[in-house]
Image 1 (tube, rainbow over the protein chains, first blue to last red):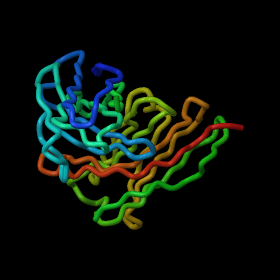
Image 2: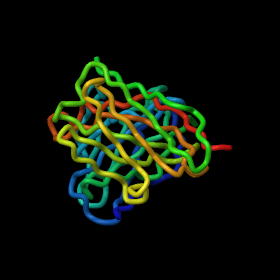
Image 3: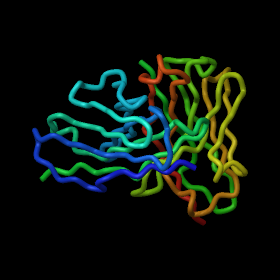
Length: 108
Length: 122
């Protein structure tokens, strides 16, 4: 079973700041890593898949990088609607999917 | 515009079977482009993948639930369903249905339903 560890658990930032979120896999998943955003009371929304490809309709301030076991989601300049919880998900252990524990981005 | 909508009882008694339906509009569950998928989220916790069904009839389930879960497609109603038997309080969660891209070219069109809270309690 592949375990995903996200860090930090919570980060406090100002609007306009850059956010850097980390996800580490317990073994190599090549580039089969996705990122999701979940706002309170809403369904998760796919942001990034295959480590670096933006999903349909996702603004360019969201970017993903990494391969193997270490991955990063970067939000270049936080908008008010970006304060939410972010999850990484691996698809490298096909057909099993698993998620990390999440990182909450809070307003400072 | 694709929409997925979950429906089913919000309260299930322990040891009974949880049954949910996802109604799809704007796409066909008979499409080979997507896996028709169920996820859940325990209150205040991270997301959990339950399993998916494919138009070919193939199904895949998370190992921890495999003995209790069934996901099936109803192409005549353009719906798919989740059945989870012998539930306990640990199955209390928000359940989401979703279409998950089967290959890279459609992976970015993943779509989720809003979710429905199911509480297991006597």
